[in-house]
Length: 101
Image 1 (cartoon, rainbow, N blue to C red):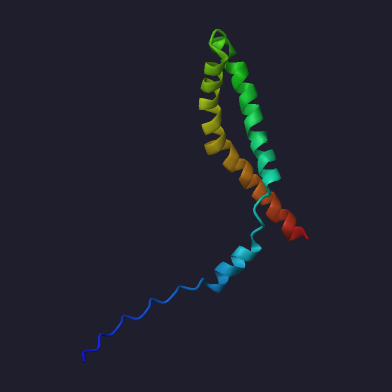
Image 2: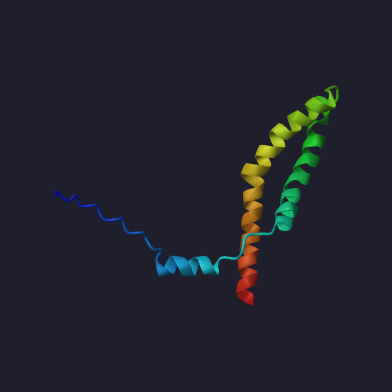
């Protein structure tokens, strides 16, 4: 009988010990309540400023179109510019607070 040799199973890569210690040093991700508060801190000022800035241009627009125009600017600004910075600040403060203990 012919025997067909099976290829050896690939070895599963194990993370390095230093990578495990780095993960242990990281704080837990923020709770849903902290994420909601940080998101509100980003959105509210952008909406307030956007409403004031766009009022002269959009005063005759239907409210739905005003909201659409405002959110087309506010949401990408918050998601791509403001929120990453606020979460980075929160992470910095969380690490700083956890190392002081």
